[in-house]
Image (cartoon, rainbow, N blue to C red; front, side, top):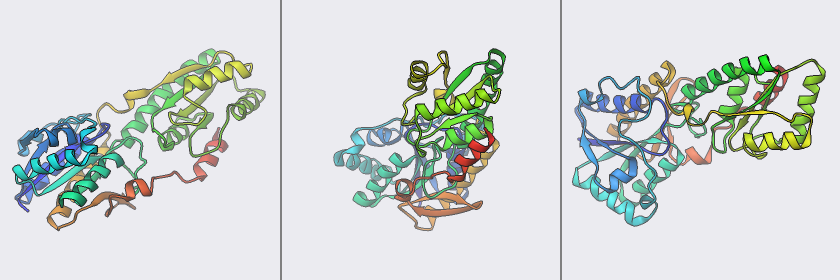
Length: 322
């Protein structure tokens, strides 16, 4: 192998630039040419490819977002789009591809591998930490710390005004980020898709807290929670209980941005180097992950077939500590 490519796809996450940097520098360390594909699979289809040297990734390890940009590409969902992407790789003599993203990005990589024989390695980049095959994903730790900082600030106001605050945390259909934010932020309640919940149950627990003398409450809500968004829950609380004025804070895309933590920078760096080494060794159709602090390789399909679920004991932990 003489030439590899790297792209970022799907939602951005802090640490993606550190991963790009690691791929580029590891490639040059091993004597490989490396090209960056801009705007993910869309750029691959439309030939947005540029060579990258060591200096092209200088000073980016601390930056959020992705210097290669990212996009969601409907064209790539069709066989014709993937064929055009494969043609772009062939035109540039790119023999292997490192795809940094989530399970949707991995599905695309697997299609390229199966349909056109492109050697692909996945790097897990998502704040949701919901990908199977790894204990942690690039960006999760930074997003968690961002959410905790927001909760800490909100608690000051909640305590000062004796209020209930509903804090909505990202995570799509995964409550991992919300659960860990609730535990680390000292929230009184947490609603996540993985555990059965209801507004009526929440009201009962809020009343129980008030009976014990609690005058303020922080409730963390995962954006994919079955009870609805934080705004939906606030409306239901006002309609069904004496808690008629709950305040809502949606942290939203603040969780995606910002300088990555040291943990995410190191994780992304390890992932990037391991991906290049895997391609050189002839690996394909696999993702890099970490378990027990060891770098591992597992099938790309593990990303969606073995979604990361938090240990059920965390639910009980959150209840005990509330």
